[in-house]
Length: 377
Ligand SMILES: *Cc1c(COP(=O)(O)O)cnc(C)c1O
Image (tube, rainbow, N blue to C red; front, side, top):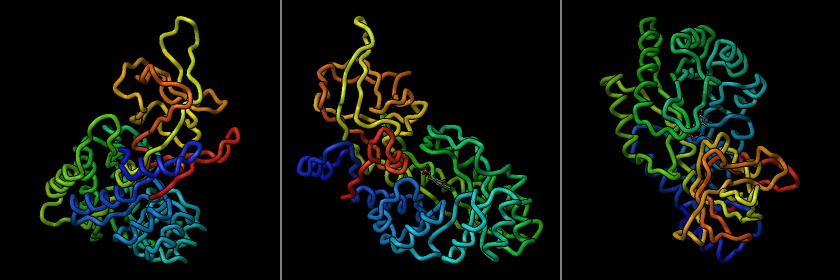
């Protein structure tokens, strides 16, 4: 949603070219809503969703922890004021020298999903806590994470046993139910797997302490999504169901759910045309596309709400495309987007719900277009 602060900023500053405007008040509200929905979980903001220094600083001040995937992300979180014990190195794919660098910076919590990675952590970050990521099927997620991260729960048992053998602290289990997850039962299935790993290792005297329940909390795009409160309740009952009265420490890692609805991209229509004289579908070309930060339109996965000054008037289906000379730079074609017939070249189009996964996905200078500019207000 474009908040009044964002609309006022655009009206007074009138920035030229496409840009993202993020309202920190919304980020603060989102943080508080997560805190309220899951009061016993520590919040590790997934830095990759939007690493703007102002956002990291705000969250650090509110008490957030940070999930990072690289040494530069760790440094950004430290610069924002987070202490090392509030930062996890949550990427399961790390160079050994980056693990060593993180260890030097004070990081003691690492993600792993195989014995090979455990060996690296044991060498480069001796004695650290590790949690093993288990696979989830991603059902119900609009941006699923596939099989790239995690291992089968049965293998997680071996991985954590090996961590103990190599002098690490086998600390827990993590999962990610897939991004933009709207099926509340996804956490229940994953928590059942996590419980199985806890149980098997307990029998060998290895007592795990923590479940990292990852991200996946959705942003409202075109359809309503459950509120943080509903996620909190579903997750809490799933924890009770699987762990009974012996609840583990828990972590959540919201990315999209923390910043998605806090940002709006201002764009402009560059061209409106048709491909033949009797074509019903208009092609609407914006000054931003897949390479300007809207990469999550890949396979038309994320469908952003668009706002124009003609909303409410008669619409017709449009193919929406970006400005670059790459034919992949088409946002919505399989499912055309209904837009007002009254739109003309030069009209502003606000793209809502773009606070997450936009600035970080923008290319450096494809066709000479500058990376997506961002204003955090
Ligand atoms: C990207 C990522 C997240 C954030 O996911 P969202 O769906 O944006 O909440 C959380 N944890 C890990 C390990 C990630 O890679």
